Image 1 (cartoon, rainbow, N blue to C red):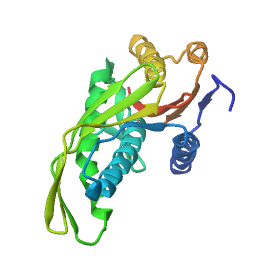
Image 2: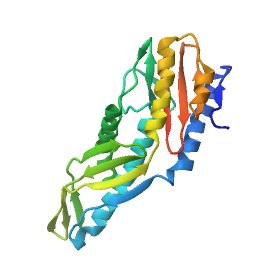
Image 3: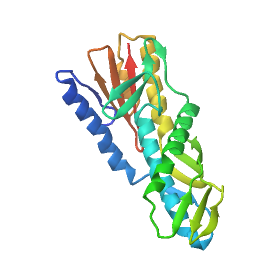
Length: 242
């Protein structure tokens, strides 16, 4: 697919087209996943529980990566209502019945934080080591979207029992950075929404081409549809309803 190419699917078999559309998203996800993360800060702990801290570090990286992919695939939302159901995703509407419903950058950061805080404890379930128990404490995540990165700072204080001795993981944050051009792709999506608010009956393909991104649009018979915008590191999906 060439840059700035716009694909508009003619709906003959909506289910087949939807599968192709979703597969396109996950294909780009797999291609970009290996480029993203860099751990820039861990925590200092007693050597006896270093393996626990290392495991938490890997959990922060793994869950953070999933949070970014899913939240961006759902239009910058984690939990939203109403939404466009697309396979396992609940894609938020950026254009909804004449109104701009797109999230602010701060709202996207909050969704990332809530996602990580919710799912990170589940990562600990797979930790296994004889004579070791982890007493969980709810993590606290701070997300920051910059011009070229998504930075997650995750404080995950916990008590660890190893051979009947209590140790503590301090509140110092784990920090992981992900390469991201979210802001640029987000701004491209905002221009599409502004175009629809101005005239919902007309799609200006020339404007979409000028955005400089691969833009795919999937309409359906219910006067709604789904956009996929692909950047270098970041893919965003969002829905519209007329």
